Image (cartoon, rainbow, N blue to C red):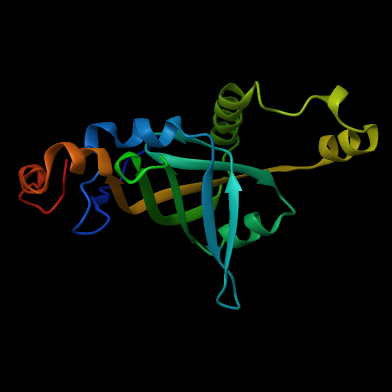
Length: 181
């Protein structure tokens, strides 16, 4: 099955910021160790979790266990996630993504996600020798679930670009269709 990448609105977070360049956006996202994901709950509050993730084809994939709240909430079809870096104002760089969610049902895609997650986090995964035997036994009996987030809107900021280029850079990067690069 061929995967298509939908056209995603990518823009600066607001007027005071310049966006991450379109050519750098997904490389920046994929380079981060964790993403904060918010799923809407029935009561109106968001369920927010820091999660490990991987990127395949400009989509974000999360790995969890099938019994967890995240897997149930992903079936509702919406999430927002964010990731960032920097401490000083001129170092701040980040992304907010709004997208459609689903629990991955295709075994081939689930295997690709599992492989990508294992490769990205191989040095950070828990090791059986580091954990109590009862805990290892429980984890090994759990069923994995994979959540796909297909971005619909992406906002980003790169304060280093503001510091280096000033306001004129925002005008120079705006395309005729309103997107920025």
